Structures are given as C-alpha cells and as structure tokens.
Length: 76
Image (cartoon, rainbow, N blue to C red; front, side, top):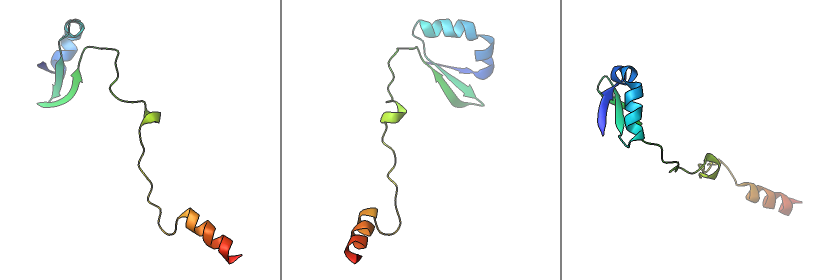
C-alpha cells in the first residue's frame, strides 16, 4: 500500500490506475491526512444494499398505538 498526495495522483493518474489494475493499493492524502483509498475492483460488494440494512428504531413518546386502541375500545 502506497501513499500519494492529491497533486501526485492528478499528475500520474493514468500510471497509478494501471498499477491498481495490477493489484496495487493507494491511499490519497490531503495535507497529510488520508481522504481516500483506491483499491482494485473485485466485483464483490461488502455492504448490503441500503434496502436490506436495518434502520434505527423510532422512539415514540407517550402511549403506544396498541395501548391507545385498546383503551379506546374499552371506553366504548
């Protein structure tokens, strides 16, 4: 894994991407801080599609809907 600056990447993009095709990995840095990683494409995604990811559970204030419905039924 090699580290290159944004300027280096812009100047040598074609050469660096050829190396990525051969299996090389690069970390792109801006002002010494890593901002991106360029890795060879494998065709395999490690993240599930967004529609399969679990969302956050909502926290509802007050009584639950089932409790409200049950109390309405008993009042009638």
